[in-house]
Image (cartoon, rainbow, N blue to C red; front, top):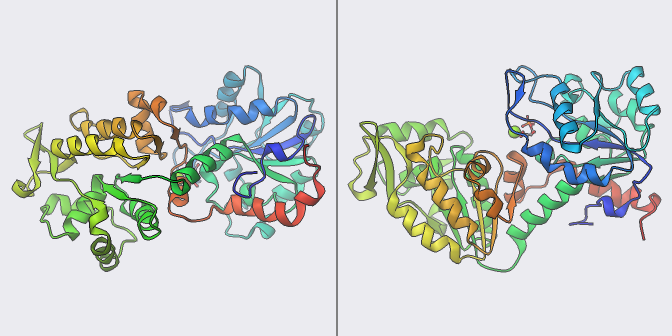
Length: 411
Ligand code: 3PG
Ligand code: MG
């Protein structure tokens, strides 16, 4: 058990039929999967289930998007990683699928079609309503166990994520266990904590900031990226027309009055950049804020800010980073993001959120020096914001009221 969540350690799975929800949603261009990190993150669970019959449910992208496609190439990536064939079936719960499931041997792995091809998957419904969907009704009787390892999708109340726990004994997989342990440690363990929040999506950073400041979790919150520019504006700094525009474009869901109150209340805990990296005539220039006239576009935190943070961040017991400090995709402006990552890695316990910042960490290899690199974007933000992840809550709820009583626990 972890935080009230049953894991593979709480059930017998050898020789059993397991329905396994993974998140292998990946960037795809021209039928090529560009990043296999999420596939790799599920290997520990798949290895543990080597003595079971495993049928995988997963999604790719969303209806209407360019990379909304079948899971055929995903099966190939999984096969390579596991060193055995993962059979791809281009349907989800047809009679052909049921027939294949019934004839599986121990050790077989099947990947079913993209669950988002199925029209009931994304309906706004409760877990109990999703449990009555055709997909759940057709599949449930052919399995002993449902395992959710799709941490990065656990904030979605979709049929494949919440519909099975009410009707099938359900636990979480090894990746979920690892993510929950690391992110809980970042929020709950003893010690001095710093949160470094950047990126473009101001709402994401603010949600985490609100949680860690109002609950007294963070000693300091360092702001970088567009979110820093927004708070510089709030603090009375004129960052100029071009930069104001970028802030406005990324401010969805933000209430200025509330943010100003938050800023004033926690001013002494919020660290803002003291200089900025801008582009002037095609080259990087670092300008102290008091001399910045707001004419150039801010592309990174400045060199003085970087050196101040490089000295301070390693002194913390726990450092959590989410969102890049600047436009690191442009090699002239990688400095802030890469140097701050190095500083984070030097803290006693270091955690990197999913999304762009974990891409940056992998680009430099610094990811290997971190204690935890999350594979999740939205789910990680929600976790750090103190919100519950619906798919995990459903597993907890039904374990407590139903499955813990009927499933024989391992001794
Ligand atoms: C993700 O990539 O964020 C998860 O796979 C969830 O996908 P979604 O944001 O399309 O629901
Ligand atoms: Mg998402």
